[in-house]
Figure 1 (cartoon, rainbow, N blue to C red):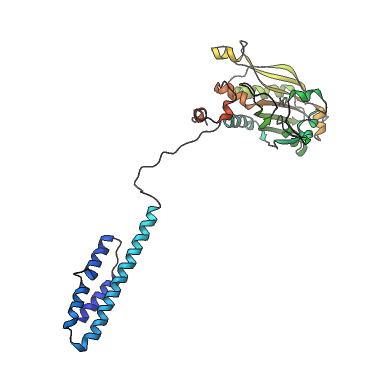
Figure 2: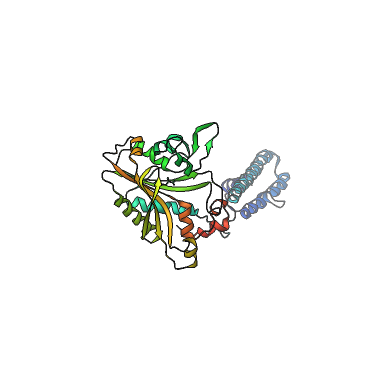
Length: 339
Ligand code: PHE
């Protein structure tokens, strides 16, 4: 009899399962109300006295072994289930992913960067909070120069030397101060002007300005570069340069692109002329080069600057500049399919 029980002890000790059902079957077989242990304990009274001690020991051992086995396998299965719970139901269909879209300002900015990087321009950036020197003085706009009024400026009240940059020409000044010609760089960034907000202008907007300085850079190079740009950006290369004035360039010009007069919108946005102004440009004034540590007798260069919002409004036919800053998803979602 004791040999039989010892075999059951081995069986219980070696038992293993991953299934709850098999564990339950094991429990019923050994510990159930009609199980083996019940049977052996009932047998106890029939065992001769001299064997009672040994018999008692083996059935106790069987009981402990079986109980411990049930307990440990139960805990193991339970913890497995818990970790499974962390993943949820793995057979469930996936949640649809909400895909965002790039902001139209970023789309246009990236496109402009791509176009210019193809012809060797790198990207430079600078601080939005500027000092007077980089935003004005170095750019041939000394204090009290009337042209400072061309760009209404946000000054920091307690210190007029600190201001929010009105254009990214300030980045070009920094770039010239820190790099020697040849220089080919474009400076995209956010700029600030103290202007009334309307459908056509905002006090915060974005610019990309370009700068090319080397030996013998001519106005013809500028024109060629602009033609390349407008062709790549709008698919149109008919441009005209209207004489204009910027303190940091001489001569200066305003760039118009021939948009055409095919649709009603064309009439509206070009005011019936077919021409659209898209940027300012010119040959860098020798004073500016000198201010930035570049010898104007050895180097010449051109610069240009455009508003990203204006270009985006033309490309996507957006009628109100304020749409860019409202972050209305119904507006933003329309740019999902763009790059
Ligand atoms: N900085 C000018 C502006 O913000 C644009 C410009 C840049 C004009 C370079 C000429 C040359 O309006």
